[in-house]
Amino acid sequence: MIYWSDEAWEELKRLPRNLQERILKALRRLDSIGYGDLKRLKGINAYRLRVGKYRVILEKRSDEIYVLHIVKREDAYK
Image 1: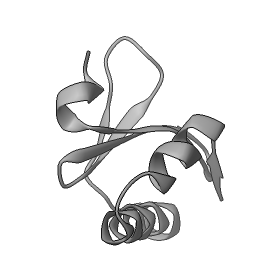
Image 2: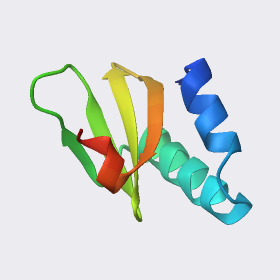
Image 3: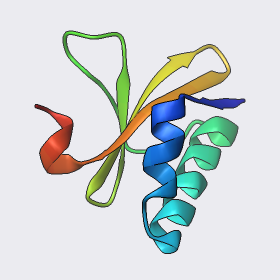
């Protein structure tokens, strides 16, 4: 199951339609088969999912994914 923070949902809605679809497809794939370019972030209890030049910052708990933010790569690690 995928849950969205209000901020992440607003960030997704601001992106172009084709990028929204790529992000949603990557999240569904991660949720269903556990596959994706996923990496644990240092210093916080979160992961990043790489989708092109964007990073989806999320928390993963058992079978649940909590999407926290969607940001461009250059803004993700500030």
